[in-house]
Image (cartoon, rainbow, N blue to C red; front, side, top):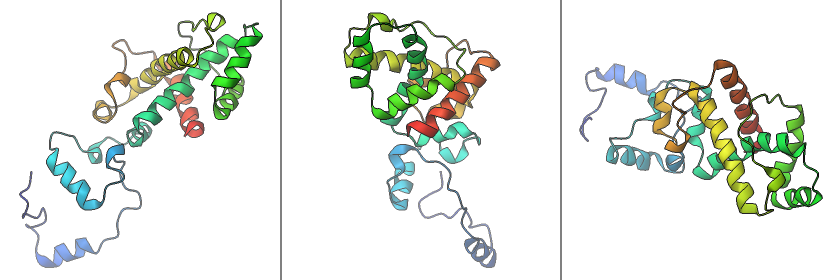
Amino acid sequence: MLGRDESPLKFLDESTRQELKNLPLMEHAPPMPYDMMELEPLQKEFFIKMQPHLPSPYFLTKDPLNRLITLSDDQLNNICRFLGLFDLYNEIKNVVRTDIFKSLKEVLSTKELQFLETCRTQNNPVRLPSMHIGAWDLKKESLDKALFDRGKTRLRGALSTAFETLFSFIPPIFMPPPKKPSKEITDILLKQLETVLNRAL
């Protein structure tokens, strides 16, 4: 790492340095980790210098999935929850208990209920282990866990196409499984993730 008083442009002559300084700034800043988004420029610089072991997001290979590193843990959990709604929709088609439908309306947010309705038009041939919604105890906590677990599995599958550097910036629980899904399945999961990113945030 460069010393505090050293300039990375010190090998250039003064006129060249001035010319570079006058160049327009990039239109789009590279994505930054969520924890650094609210920091002032000097605070960011200090943070990076104090955490030299952390890789820089500026060196990430360009990929649409890089958007995920700008999300907080709560937002990532919400993404999983919405992905889990694909599994919930598959199961409620066979439910006959009216108390389950009543409880779903109470537990799910308006936005989630709207998304659940749109799942009927989404192609979802990827089947995960059953949530056993027909035996649901009607408690919010158990449904939350089931949605997160299925959604996390879908997110991990979608991320199996990502570059390794991405996983330095998101929680390790979202690392892809050792046995990666086929390209056909991954493509479907990526489309589902894109749909959720556009509607859940």
